[in-house]
Image 1 (cartoon, one colour):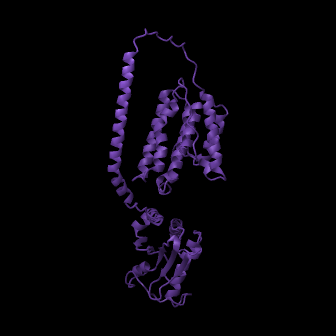
Image 2: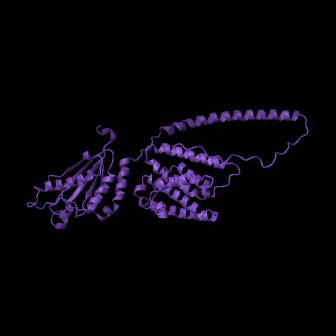
Image 3: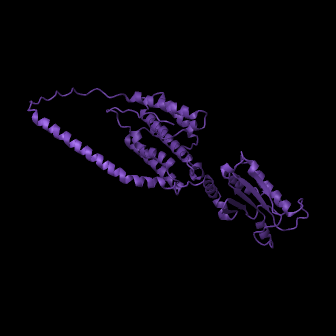
Length: 396
């Protein structure tokens, strides 16, 4: 979105105390969006909470009304929360479920209310000039709110920002008239013109010498800089991290508790990722019914495996116990039924169900010896194997 021109200020324009109090928070909006992921998003959230407390204190010390401070805090919290949500790490952090707007105003729909506040303030722009200017800065720093999701939202938002800038121009006014008449020019007695002529000639000659020296130095600098410039241009560009690897990292963070408990095994191999569900109580003996507590884990895996290219293979495993009284003819049939159940659950949460298939090995592949009930429970497991595929290799 292109931003309107800078709002002109006249020389007698008073300082916007509200905007001055919000400077650190406004700087944080752009800093959060375009900075690398913080080591501790929770610590960053605490720092922003403390900065908002300081903003409240600065407003009180400046004598701003409580209503003005509350409305401005609402807009700043909303803009900061959206800035976090637009980052790759914002969706998986503590911030996603407990933003600043929820902390200070117990709300989560700031993207709509922000513009309702703006409409109310525009009814009396002269009375709310400082707040309108703060909102203008939030919009200029990239806040979109509801206009990010509606049809033609960017064009409508740009029109709104231009309208707000025009209101601020009208309220600010132009340069005032002079407060006092200009002083009369001083009269200087005429002197001989020859010394002045000599000074002009010497100055012109000195400027020509300096200009010639400048040309010589520039040519020498270009001759030395050209090899360095060619060497820089010949350096290979750094390779960006594939989107798939970023998705794997995000998935591992989302499953870190289950991995720590041993319910899930994470194995990143060349060309594929193997996620093993092996909690021990995944399936009952001779049954393909999945333990309900694993359904939420599989749904979470599906959300993070929604990559545009690749295949998912669900491989089922059973123990070696005899299942003669079961409805399945063999352990392989039972393993396949278990794999199909997990694959169906994945398909229901993915847009490309055709690239998910279920398999079962013909021969048992136990993790531990099948000599105790506990070991047999461990061997009843599911492998979810994701193999990414380059976009050029995908069939049209």
